[in-house]
Image 1 (cartoon, rainbow, N blue to C red):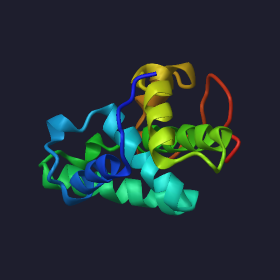
Image 2: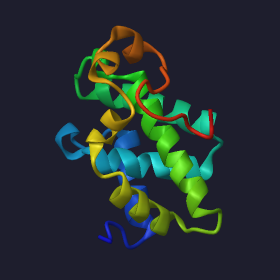
Image 3: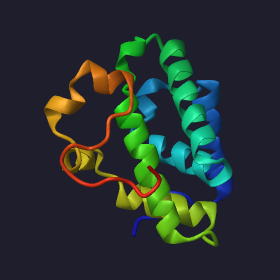
Length: 143
């Protein structure tokens, strides 16, 4: 497995860059979204972590002049839920660094969402505005 992070400080730097909007939008790919989500989910209850991610994404979009219509609630919550599920499977004793590296490796393919959702559903305005459960495969244990 690739090691993306060696220390918690490296992970915190990604989170801080996201929260302060000092990370350029071009330097915030899928793996960094995962990194921030893992950090939140390891420290906060699910609903608080989800709200913090949502708020952070809106702040990031606003700061970088990207329209809020880019935000997608179902996609955001899908990743938060699948990360939560993976963290639960890893167990409570796993470190932030180990959990983050494992999740970034396991969930690196952003197209994984299409194993769970049809493109038609994800393209809908309804799915952009609110959480919609997967239409192709499975539910999450934290639903």
